[in-house]
Image (cartoon, rainbow, N blue to C red; front, side, top):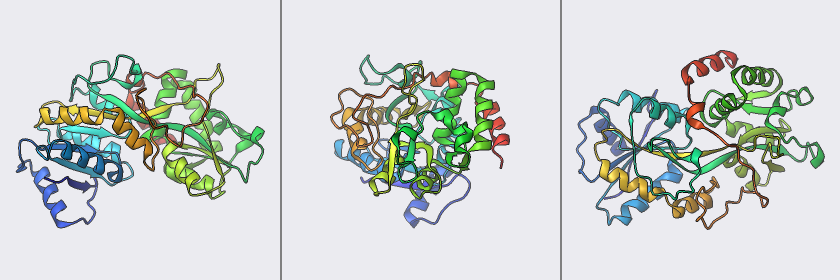
Length: 352
């Protein structure tokens, strides 16, 4: 049995191969004809990265367990998949949620629709990378970094080193950030709200709104920097390394590294098994297969250069600097409190 994938948009569907449409129709109908050994994965990680790994899992079971993968294609895919899981909570179709970030996984945790799992990770696993109730586990992270155009800023001494420099008037319209409404940028400022307080973070965001170029996503920020439209921007390591690998004059800076500063935020992929999943045993086997140093190495070697969490990883990703990085200490569960109200406030602030 080969890997079966379904590419869907929450709001609208793209034209895909007929067999994929048929599988998706079956999933949506709730009358899915599939073997009890199949496992259904909703994945926010891009299909090009996740599909080969899911296929490797199938091969590891001698094809006794098949994988049906659903990959959302919208730019707000994490939100879309999370909302679909919420809508299906009374009759889950998904067994395992593979999220490429964390905040909406925690949102599902707080809604009580995830099942605890005995994650096969060492006791030294970072506390901010595993749920307090065992419902999710984080691995293969991206870091929130500054990308600098070295043609526009050739002097290293002039390079920004802190995230809050996005609000500094000296960089007015010369720096960029994605709207903090979705994905890792939304997660980043929810974390800062937990660390610095709500009012201080709202004040910082208003200053950034007025000072920086605000773009639709992290990829657009990285491309604006590499094209010289802005001198620097806040983005993710996976988007930053692509521009660097393409040969553009850019450098990656891990921000807030001084002792009195909070450190660089890393945001992991997360895995979570759905409560009342149709195939919990198969889902658990797949979760254990994915939560290994070997899979982290595979993601580290890929084009997105993900950052392994495991100390047993053997492959340092190209995006990681040679010197040690001070990581921000985070309580993602606390950062997710009051998410809906927070999201509405930011939606109003960044409406235009």
